Image (cartoon, rainbow, N blue to C red; front, side, top):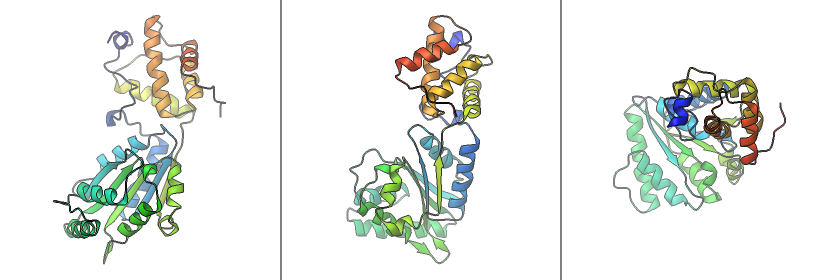
Length: 275
Protein backbone atom coordinates (compact mmCIF):
# COMPACT_ATOMS: atom_id res chain seq x y z
CA UNK A 1 0.00 0.00 0.00
CA UNK A 2 1.43 3.34 -1.04
CA UNK A 3 0.60 5.20 2.17
CA UNK A 4 2.57 2.60 4.16
CA UNK A 5 5.56 2.90 1.84
CA UNK A 6 5.43 6.68 2.16
CA UNK A 7 6.00 6.38 5.90
CA UNK A 8 8.42 3.39 5.62
CA UNK A 9 5.94 1.02 7.26
CA UNK A 10 5.95 -2.71 6.54
CA UNK A 11 2.33 -3.21 7.63
CA UNK A 12 -0.68 -1.49 9.15
CA UNK A 13 0.40 -0.35 12.63
CA UNK A 14 -3.00 0.72 13.95
CA UNK A 15 -5.42 -2.05 13.11
CA UNK A 16 -8.06 -2.66 15.77
CA UNK A 17 -7.85 -6.41 15.18
CA UNK A 18 -6.28 -8.27 18.09
CA UNK A 19 -2.67 -9.15 17.26
CA UNK A 20 -0.43 -10.18 20.15
CA UNK A 21 2.64 -8.91 18.30
CA UNK A 22 1.34 -5.43 18.99
CA UNK A 23 0.57 -6.03 22.66
CA UNK A 24 1.83 -3.01 24.56
CA UNK A 25 3.03 -4.05 27.99
CA UNK A 26 2.18 -0.96 30.01
CA UNK A 27 1.82 -0.38 33.73
CA UNK A 28 -1.99 -0.74 33.66
CA UNK A 29 -2.03 -4.06 31.82
CA UNK A 30 1.01 -5.30 33.73
CA UNK A 31 -0.80 -4.79 37.03
CA UNK A 32 -3.89 -6.58 35.67
CA UNK A 33 -1.74 -9.48 34.47
CA UNK A 34 -0.08 -9.89 37.87
CA UNK A 35 -3.43 -9.95 39.68
CA UNK A 36 -5.08 -12.34 37.24
CA UNK A 37 -2.14 -14.73 37.18
CA UNK A 38 -2.29 -14.79 40.96
CA UNK A 39 -5.99 -15.66 40.70
CA UNK A 40 -5.37 -18.66 38.43
CA UNK A 41 -2.20 -19.86 40.16
CA UNK A 42 -4.01 -20.03 43.49
CA UNK A 43 -7.35 -21.12 41.98
CA UNK A 44 -9.30 -18.27 43.53
CA UNK A 45 -12.47 -19.21 41.65
CA UNK A 46 -13.69 -15.88 40.28
CA UNK A 47 -11.81 -12.85 38.95
CA UNK A 48 -13.37 -9.86 37.22
CA UNK A 49 -11.94 -7.32 34.76
CA UNK A 50 -14.11 -4.37 33.72
CA UNK A 51 -13.44 -1.37 31.54
CA UNK A 52 -15.03 0.95 29.03
CA UNK A 53 -15.37 0.25 25.32
CA UNK A 54 -11.96 0.04 23.65
CA UNK A 55 -9.83 -0.08 26.80
CA UNK A 56 -8.15 -3.36 25.87
CA UNK A 57 -10.14 -6.07 27.65
CA UNK A 58 -10.12 -8.46 24.67
CA UNK A 59 -6.41 -7.86 24.09
CA UNK A 60 -5.72 -8.62 27.74
CA UNK A 61 -7.85 -11.77 27.69
CA UNK A 62 -6.02 -13.18 24.70
CA UNK A 63 -2.65 -12.25 26.15
CA UNK A 64 -3.37 -14.08 29.37
CA UNK A 65 -4.61 -17.12 27.47
CA UNK A 66 -1.37 -17.20 25.48
CA UNK A 67 0.74 -16.94 28.63
CA UNK A 68 -0.94 -19.79 30.52
CA UNK A 69 1.49 -22.68 30.17
CA UNK A 70 -0.31 -25.70 28.69
CA UNK A 71 1.82 -27.89 30.97
CA UNK A 72 0.17 -26.26 33.98
CA UNK A 73 -3.27 -25.20 32.79
CA UNK A 74 -6.25 -26.48 30.86
CA UNK A 75 -7.42 -23.07 29.69
CA UNK A 76 -10.10 -21.88 27.29
CA UNK A 77 -11.47 -18.56 26.06
CA UNK A 78 -15.19 -18.16 25.47
CA UNK A 79 -16.51 -15.05 23.69
CA UNK A 80 -20.17 -14.19 24.26
CA UNK A 81 -21.67 -12.67 21.11
CA UNK A 82 -25.22 -11.82 22.18
CA UNK A 83 -27.30 -11.30 25.30
CA UNK A 84 -29.92 -14.00 24.66
CA UNK A 85 -27.73 -16.89 25.84
CA UNK A 86 -29.17 -19.22 28.47
CA UNK A 87 -27.71 -20.98 31.47
CA UNK A 88 -28.00 -24.28 29.59
CA UNK A 89 -26.02 -22.86 26.64
CA UNK A 90 -23.35 -21.52 28.99
CA UNK A 91 -22.83 -24.83 30.79
CA UNK A 92 -22.69 -26.74 27.50
CA UNK A 93 -20.14 -24.33 25.98
CA UNK A 94 -17.92 -24.47 29.06
CA UNK A 95 -18.00 -28.27 28.97
CA UNK A 96 -17.06 -28.31 25.29
CA UNK A 97 -14.27 -25.77 25.78
CA UNK A 98 -12.75 -27.87 28.54
CA UNK A 99 -12.70 -31.01 26.43
CA UNK A 100 -15.84 -32.90 27.45
CA UNK A 101 -16.60 -35.34 24.63
CA UNK A 102 -20.10 -36.20 23.41
CA UNK A 103 -21.69 -33.50 25.51
CA UNK A 104 -25.17 -34.49 26.69
CA UNK A 105 -28.32 -32.48 26.00
CA UNK A 106 -29.70 -32.48 29.53
CA UNK A 107 -28.11 -29.86 31.81
CA UNK A 108 -27.88 -32.17 34.82
CA UNK A 109 -26.08 -34.75 32.70
CA UNK A 110 -23.76 -32.06 31.36
CA UNK A 111 -22.92 -30.94 34.88
CA UNK A 112 -22.00 -34.53 35.74
CA UNK A 113 -19.80 -34.78 32.66
CA UNK A 114 -18.17 -31.45 33.46
CA UNK A 115 -17.47 -32.43 37.07
CA UNK A 116 -15.82 -35.68 35.99
CA UNK A 117 -13.74 -33.78 33.42
CA UNK A 118 -12.62 -31.24 36.02
CA UNK A 119 -11.60 -34.04 38.37
CA UNK A 120 -9.66 -35.62 35.50
CA UNK A 121 -7.89 -32.33 34.81
CA UNK A 122 -7.11 -31.89 38.49
CA UNK A 123 -5.74 -35.42 38.87
CA UNK A 124 -3.48 -34.90 35.87
CA UNK A 125 -1.83 -32.02 37.72
CA UNK A 126 -3.41 -29.20 35.69
CA UNK A 127 -5.58 -26.27 36.70
CA UNK A 128 -8.80 -25.55 34.80
CA UNK A 129 -9.33 -21.91 33.77
CA UNK A 130 -12.13 -20.43 31.65
CA UNK A 131 -11.84 -16.85 30.42
CA UNK A 132 -15.08 -15.25 29.23
CA UNK A 133 -14.94 -12.11 27.08
CA UNK A 134 -17.93 -9.75 26.64
CA UNK A 135 -19.26 -11.19 29.90
CA UNK A 136 -21.68 -8.26 30.32
CA UNK A 137 -23.80 -10.13 27.73
CA UNK A 138 -24.47 -12.81 30.35
CA UNK A 139 -27.64 -11.42 31.85
CA UNK A 140 -30.22 -12.74 34.25
CA UNK A 141 -30.29 -14.24 37.71
CA UNK A 142 -30.35 -17.81 36.38
CA UNK A 143 -26.99 -17.44 34.68
CA UNK A 144 -25.44 -15.84 37.76
CA UNK A 145 -26.76 -18.70 39.91
CA UNK A 146 -25.24 -21.16 37.42
CA UNK A 147 -21.84 -19.57 37.88
CA UNK A 148 -22.20 -19.93 41.63
CA UNK A 149 -23.07 -23.59 41.20
CA UNK A 150 -20.05 -24.21 38.99
CA UNK A 151 -17.81 -22.55 41.58
CA UNK A 152 -19.07 -25.08 44.12
CA UNK A 153 -17.25 -27.84 42.25
CA UNK A 154 -14.28 -28.54 44.49
CA UNK A 155 -11.70 -31.16 45.33
CA UNK A 156 -10.15 -31.72 48.75
CA UNK A 157 -7.37 -29.25 47.86
CA UNK A 158 -9.72 -26.49 46.67
CA UNK A 159 -11.67 -25.31 43.67
CA UNK A 160 -11.65 -27.27 40.43
CA UNK A 161 -12.34 -24.30 38.17
CA UNK A 162 -11.43 -20.62 38.00
CA UNK A 163 -13.34 -18.09 35.91
CA UNK A 164 -11.98 -14.77 34.67
CA UNK A 165 -14.77 -12.55 33.34
CA UNK A 166 -14.00 -9.57 31.08
CA UNK A 167 -16.74 -7.05 30.43
CA UNK A 168 -18.11 -3.55 30.35
CA UNK A 169 -19.00 -1.88 33.66
CA UNK A 170 -22.54 -3.29 33.23
CA UNK A 171 -21.07 -6.60 34.35
CA UNK A 172 -21.13 -5.31 37.93
CA UNK A 173 -24.91 -4.95 37.76
CA UNK A 174 -25.28 -8.50 36.43
CA UNK A 175 -23.17 -9.94 39.23
CA UNK A 176 -25.29 -8.05 41.77
CA UNK A 177 -28.29 -10.16 40.73
CA UNK A 178 -26.85 -12.93 42.89
CA UNK A 179 -25.35 -11.54 46.08
CA UNK A 180 -23.69 -14.83 47.15
CA UNK A 181 -21.91 -14.92 43.78
CA UNK A 182 -20.82 -11.28 44.09
CA UNK A 183 -19.32 -12.10 47.47
CA UNK A 184 -17.18 -14.80 45.83
CA UNK A 185 -15.31 -12.34 43.64
CA UNK A 186 -11.71 -12.87 44.73
CA UNK A 187 -9.93 -10.46 42.37
CA UNK A 188 -11.35 -7.40 40.64
CA UNK A 189 -9.56 -4.95 38.35
CA UNK A 190 -10.79 -1.97 36.34
CA UNK A 191 -8.93 -1.06 33.16
CA UNK A 192 -8.47 2.67 32.70
CA UNK A 193 -7.58 4.85 29.74
CA UNK A 194 -3.95 5.83 29.07
CA UNK A 195 -2.46 9.03 30.39
CA UNK A 196 -0.54 11.27 27.97
CA UNK A 197 2.80 9.50 28.46
CA UNK A 198 1.28 6.04 27.91
CA UNK A 199 -0.48 7.28 24.77
CA UNK A 200 2.85 8.51 23.40
CA UNK A 201 4.60 5.24 24.25
CA UNK A 202 1.74 3.18 22.84
CA UNK A 203 1.86 4.96 19.47
CA UNK A 204 5.62 4.65 19.23
CA UNK A 205 5.49 0.97 20.22
CA UNK A 206 3.03 0.10 17.46
CA UNK A 207 5.06 2.02 14.89
CA UNK A 208 8.22 0.13 15.88
CA UNK A 209 6.47 -3.23 15.54
CA UNK A 210 5.29 -2.18 12.07
CA UNK A 211 8.90 -1.51 11.07
CA UNK A 212 8.98 2.27 11.28
CA UNK A 213 12.14 4.10 12.31
CA UNK A 214 10.89 7.60 11.49
CA UNK A 215 9.03 10.22 13.52
CA UNK A 216 5.68 9.96 11.74
CA UNK A 217 3.77 12.19 14.17
CA UNK A 218 4.86 15.55 15.52
CA UNK A 219 4.75 15.96 19.33
CA UNK A 220 1.72 18.26 18.99
CA UNK A 221 -0.04 15.67 16.84
CA UNK A 222 0.48 12.97 19.47
CA UNK A 223 -0.83 15.32 22.16
CA UNK A 224 -3.93 15.95 20.04
CA UNK A 225 -4.44 12.22 19.49
CA UNK A 226 -4.39 11.77 23.25
CA UNK A 227 -6.84 14.61 23.87
CA UNK A 228 -9.36 13.49 21.25
CA UNK A 229 -9.10 9.81 22.21
CA UNK A 230 -9.04 10.52 25.94
CA UNK A 231 -6.38 7.79 26.08
CA UNK A 232 -8.71 5.08 24.78
CA UNK A 233 -6.54 2.55 22.85
CA UNK A 234 -9.20 1.77 20.24
CA UNK A 235 -9.73 5.45 19.47
CA UNK A 236 -5.97 6.05 19.42
CA UNK A 237 -5.74 3.37 16.73
CA UNK A 238 -8.64 4.80 14.72
CA UNK A 239 -7.31 8.36 14.77
CA UNK A 240 -3.72 7.33 14.04
CA UNK A 241 -4.74 5.03 11.19
CA UNK A 242 -6.73 7.81 9.55
CA UNK A 243 -3.90 10.27 10.15
CA UNK A 244 -1.37 8.14 8.28
CA UNK A 245 -3.66 7.92 5.27
CA UNK A 246 -4.58 11.61 5.30
CA UNK A 247 -0.93 12.58 5.75
CA UNK A 248 -0.01 10.48 2.74
CA UNK A 249 -2.66 12.16 0.57
CA UNK A 250 -1.08 15.57 1.13
CA UNK A 251 2.46 14.14 1.33
CA UNK A 252 3.03 15.46 4.84
CA UNK A 253 5.94 14.33 7.03
CA UNK A 254 5.51 14.35 9.91
CA UNK A 255 1.77 14.36 10.48
CA UNK A 256 0.89 17.63 12.21
CA UNK A 257 -1.82 18.68 14.66
CA UNK A 258 -4.07 20.20 11.97
CA UNK A 259 -4.51 16.78 10.36
CA UNK A 260 -5.53 15.27 13.71
CA UNK A 261 -7.99 18.11 14.28
CA UNK A 262 -9.57 17.51 10.87
CA UNK A 263 -9.87 13.75 11.45
CA UNK A 264 -11.40 14.27 14.89
CA UNK A 265 -13.95 16.65 13.38
CA UNK A 266 -14.86 14.13 10.66
CA UNK A 267 -15.21 11.38 13.28
CA UNK A 268 -17.38 13.63 15.49
CA UNK A 269 -14.96 13.25 18.37
CA UNK A 270 -15.34 15.85 21.13
CA UNK A 271 -12.19 17.47 22.40
CA UNK A 272 -11.72 15.96 25.85
CA UNK A 273 -10.32 18.20 28.55
CA UNK A 274 -6.67 17.53 29.35
CA UNK A 275 -6.00 15.72 32.62
